[in-house]
Length: 269
Image: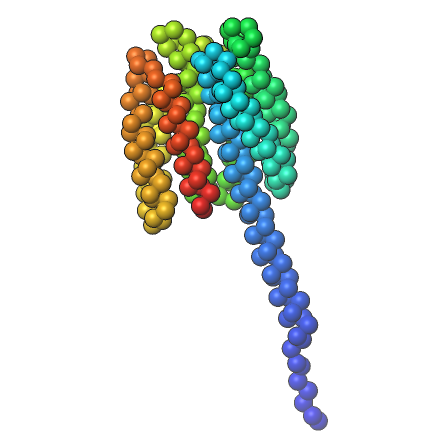
């Protein structure tokens, strides 16, 4: 009796290989989508602080048309990020994304309510509305960030943008405090619970050192970080002495440059 041999099914092997490749590609796509939601949410936090910085700059410059134009550009940028977030594929953060889009829409409206150019002063109500909306926006964006880090992990790009966001946060608060005579600033609810600029400056120095170590093997990013560090050391004393020596014009100028370079470094990853 002739022995029969079973030949391997090439169709079956092909089907299994196709299924495996589909699984790999699918997982890679989700990882990219998750990271994009993480990055866009962080960029929105940075943009929110840029808008509030410009809002207070407008008061400081007494309604200057150039600052008004920059504020409008920052608002437009935030709007663009809202669109990106709305298109992100992150089902686990769907509710927080929806909430962030609604709050950021209100935030943009409040950002346009600085009437110093027409009224000669900035209403305390306008400041309160802006900061309450920003607080709520940052809180909901943090929900997305925490969830996406949980799903897809942290990234070097996120760390660079997180540092940029921290610098913009302290700059926004620094400018707000500089608005009133003597640097007392304009009060916002919950201010006593906020980290002051000197405390935030210490945190930023730590983040900058960590980022520098992280990118030692990348010459281009290392060069950018060295440039950032030189500029930071120049304005760091201004944050640490925020109560006695306010130089908001200098601080905002250097902040804009450092944030731009941190974002440039993030784009290279």
